[in-house]
Length: 73
Length: 396
Image (tube, rainbow over all chains, first blue to last red; front, side):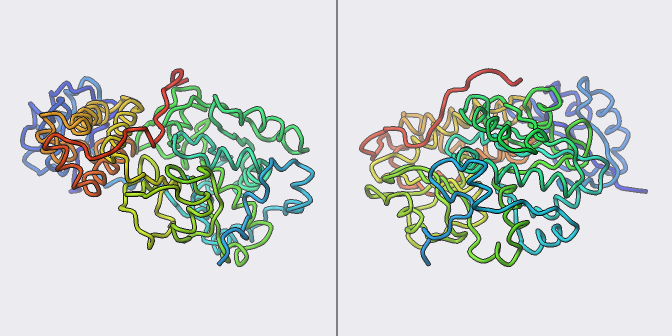
């Protein structure tokens, strides 16, 4: 089974904060209510909660990805 | 080494017209497959600030279907004038470079993007009209903001959107203008490409030159062409020499950092887009930094929370410190936490760029910071040294 990791799109995110409520083990909120990932890798036992957190984001700013995406040409 | 002797990009102090340009540089060779290897051998890197290898970027875009070339002359950094100066004095070298790049990657659409309020657009339109192949290049006049030159922002604007970054996950080299692979290349880089095509990699590597904008306490602030690696004293002498005692240099512009004044420094490829400002000893580095951080906060595209709120909070803390208010000591204590709260959390480099400058101010002006924390500023005057222009217009 591949590793799953959480990714926040900071442009979409509007600080609703649902993700931190549903997944406090991995997500905390900064002074302005935006999510900070304590760890982007999602351990097995938190996968269900992570999926719920992703589904609960009204701005579709949180996602789960499989492989590590390389950035920039 | 005589720095004055090497003038490849800016051979004249007056704009070089089409005819004189041709007489000086000769006609443009065709871009064949060998040119890509030549660019690679030249070691040419991007001159917009990031310094990415040009050959690698050309190859990546070339693999795609019907790519687009964007010559980036937007230069949103207010302390930098080198792209505007290059476009004014030697527009045809830039246009040649853009057309060569288009040939190399197989692009049909070529866009030359410049700031909307500058006088450049009229001159460039004339330069394009003066040459037989000028019709192949579209001139785009972009809103003047700090972030518009960021490649995803520029691509988004050309596609009809707002000139705001679209995030780290968008890759213009794969999917950019019109959804096609897009080469976004700084105009100084393209001018160098036109030199490599004419004179080859070996020639290029000998006395490689860069454009630098020198400001602050110098007799003739402005743009100079100097050999890469030139010692700072020589760089300043090219700008007429330093006019008074200097305490620090801002290098790399507003994404850059402060360095304590010392003669052993050299102008390197890592110094962003090579802005160097000499801060007089009588000025206050904290007041200057506070003004720039406030400007950067205001210039945020305000899309990402950590950038919008974080830079605002950083600017407020810096303002408190700069004014040596009673709360200055608390504000100093807040900086480190703020930095941790902001770093790496924006969709583009804007917040981290501003943070880098702020963090270097704390390091370099440490003694002044202690003075401010205890309620006083040791500077003799607060006359602004770094430019922080007002924003005009919107994002379209």
